[in-house]
Image (cartoon, rainbow, N blue to C red; front, side, top):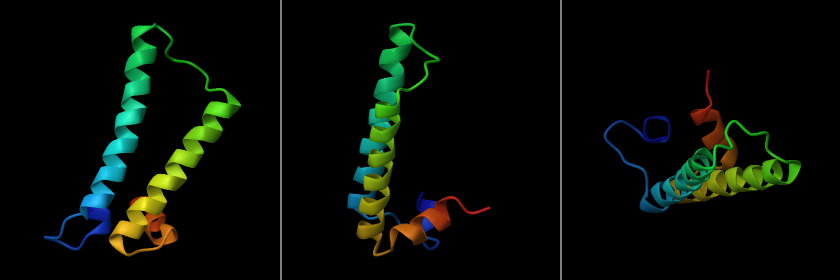
Length: 81
C-alpha cells in the first residue's frame, strides 16, 4: 500500500495504516478460525460476500480520506497494471 500511495520516502498516515491492519486482521482471523475447524476451502455465502465487499469499500474510503485522495485514486494506484 505504502509503495503505491506514497511518494518515495513518505509513509502512510496512521489512520490509513490502522484501516488496512484492521481489515487484514479480520480476514486473517476468519481464515485462522476456519482452518482450525477444517472448513477451508469454503464457499462464502452471498451474505458473507456482501459483507466483505462493504468492508473493502469502507477500508478504501478510510485510506483515501487519511491520504487526502479519492477512493478512485486509491483503487487506481493499488490495482494498477
